[in-house]
Image: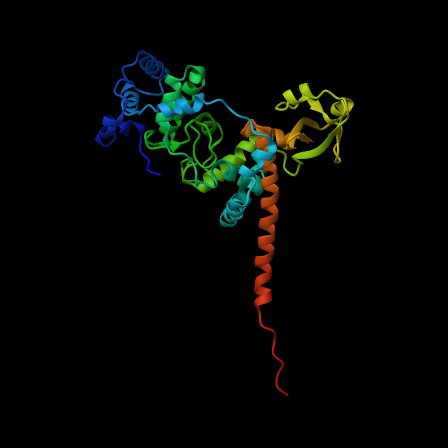
Length: 350
C-alpha cells in the first residue's frame, strides 16, 4: 500500500483532483465547525483537514442506498448467499495458502482458523469484494448529508482520519464499502483503531492488502469480545407448546438468561449443556411456515458482536464447520498421495 503522511494531501498530486471534488463542501458552515472541533482537539491542523475536504466528492447514490427500506430475509433465503460452493472452495484454498498464519492466530488469540476463514469469506470473499468507494467520500457524504446517522458517521469519519494519520496513509487513497467498512474483514474505522493489529510486524496495520494483518485482526477482535476456545457455538432446542417466546426472541442479542432459566420457561436444549451456561433463543425459518429453534451460546453471542444478526452468526458457524471438514479432508488426501504414488518394490531376480 502506498504510504505517506496525511500532510502530503497538500501536495500537488493530490490537489490535482480538485476538479472532481465538491467545490462548495469546504465552505459549508457545518464542515467548518467540524474542522474547528478537530483542530481544537490538537490531533489535526487546519491545512491538512482543509486539503482533504477540498478533494472529497460527495456521493448522492450512497444516500439513495441508505434510504431504501431494509428487508429482512428468512433463513431459508439468507443461507445460500453465504453458505455455497463458491465460498467453500475459495475458503479451503485461502486456508491452505495461509495455514501458518491462521495457526499462529489461533495460538495467540485462541480463535480457530475455520472461524477466521468463514468471516473473511462472508465479508469480502477473501478480499475479492472489499468495496470501491473512496472512504473519505463515503464517510463525509453520510456524516454531513444524512442527518439520521450523522452523529455516528461523524465519529467514524474522525476515527478514519486519525487512523490515516497514525498509519501514514493518504486518506484520499483508501477504499471500502458505501458505509465506510474497510479491507478484507470490513472493519469500521473505530473498530480498526480498537482491534486491528500489525500481525506480520511490518510497522503498519494494513487490512486492505496484508492478509496476515487481516487474519490477526479478526482473531484479535473475537478474542477481546470473549471467544472461548473449544466451546460450542450453538445447539438445537425445542419449545414446549403454548410458550410465548416473543420476549426471548426480542432479547436475542443479549446473554441475560442461563440454560436452566430457559428450561423453566419451556425452552428445552436438545444437546448436552450445563444449566449455568448462558444462552439466547434463536428461531430460524427453514421453509415457509416452518421454524427450527436453537440456543446460541457465548461464542454465538461473540459472532453477533461482529455483525448484529443471528442469521449472520448461524451461517458463519455452519460455513466454519464445513470449511474445517473440507480442509482436513484435503490435508488427509494430500498426505496419502505420496505413499500411494510410490512404486512397489521389485522382486530380485532368482
